[in-house]
Every structure is written in structure tokens, then in C-alpha cells.
Amino acid sequence: QVQLVESGGGLVQPGGSLRLSCAAAGSIFNIYGMGWYRQAPGKQRELVAMFRRFGTTAYADSVKGRFTITGDISKNTVSLQMDSLKPEDTAVYYCNVVDNSGRYLGVWGQGTLVTVSS
Image (cartoon, rainbow, N blue to C red; front, side, top):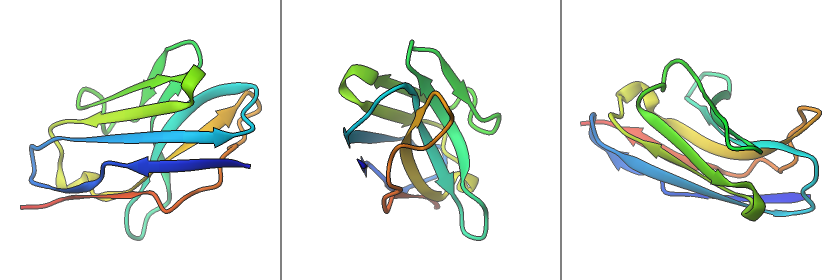
């Protein structure tokens, strides 16, 4: 199994910034990428950003231009810089590793809570 450890959440005012970090450990093969996901109360978990194995990135439309994902696949780490945060960004944020078949390799952890509020 692949273990995931997320950190960096907290309370921030609208317009503020936070940086999330994630490290994965375990048997990791055939990686497609590492991604950040979030789940707001009463909503389904959604993909926020993906850092692909060869360095390309993808973002949800709602965060484009505000969030930046970086990573080091060789070290199984990924980070998410979140700027210009909005109240609607409030959610529990999770990371996971995705293989070339689209499967999640990691065990979903507790995530890290991001609260954007004045």
C-alpha cells in the first residue's frame, strides 16, 4: 500500500495564500502523476490539480491562475501553492498517486483542512 501524508492546511482570509505539501511512501510503480483533490461539505471529491510524471500540469477551471502545483516524481512529493483564496476553496484537501491505468495507488488519508473565511 501507498501511504500519503498531507500538510499545510489552515485558516486564511479571502485573498490570502497557503501552501500544501504531500509525500507518498510505499510500492509506487507506473506512475501517471500525483494530484491534489478536495472535498467540500456536502459535495463529491474533485480533482484540483495534477502533476504528471514528465512535468506537465493540469488544473480545474475553478483554480486556474490562482493555484500552482509542483512536484518531484522521483521523490514522490507534490505541493500546491494556493493564492487569491476564495471562500469557495474551503474544503478538505487530499493528495494521491495515480498510475497509468487511472487507479489511485494511495490509501486516502485524513487530508488537510483549508478554511477561507474572514
